[in-house]
Length: 289
Image 1 (tube, rainbow, N blue to C red):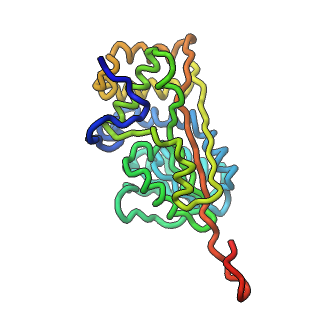
Image 2: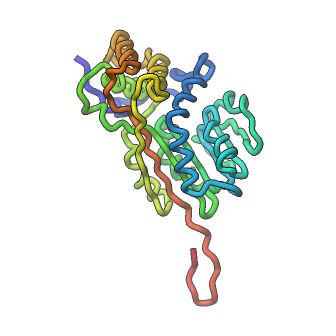
Image 3: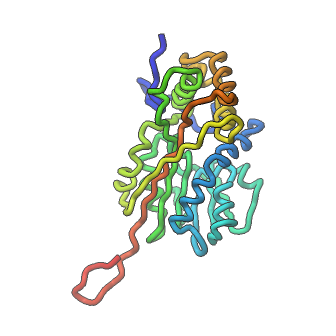
């Protein structure tokens, strides 16, 4: 009998996980950019509304980390009118395929020692740190890339119900997916609810967070995203022993059915500001912000 896995939970024993894009979600696999763009269709409007509400606009120099196909980077330029966006990824093939004025592209591993591309008014990463074991160090490191008065905005997946919802093919496969991704590429979403405290611990101020959950509707971008993701991660999902191929097939059919009645994992977004540098005051006064 298989143990019930907590979404994103750590299995016993040392992790032997590799990197995102190696065992699972390989960029060279046909259709991978389309799968990423389905996630963008589900979440880009939410992300852009938040970034613009935080002030992203003309004059801002922005860093987009784990930029994927570059949809947010380009929308920052075209819609928000920011000055520049530096888009960073370990594999930039999807970024270089869609150039834009003001868009710089850097192929780099942000977890490598010495990663320091400059200082920015906005540093943004979405669905990235959940795949990296050094997320605590990286949160602090990304905060250090902020210019004075800049804002760090981080988003990752949050699963509110899979571990406690009624057992269905959908919940079983979603649960097995988190375990399979943990085993193969190190994905862990068990810590993401701590984002506000982690940003405060990194020295940022005026910290806040929100959660958005797009509805699972047959044919919707988020439903298609999960179906494509399960197909690409099928080997890792089945290898957990929590489900078999038939269960994966049933869950995919359920996502495209009018009978689907489930809650998708959503997105938690947290942000915090770097203080303005102290401004010298008259003799005898303290620092001003």
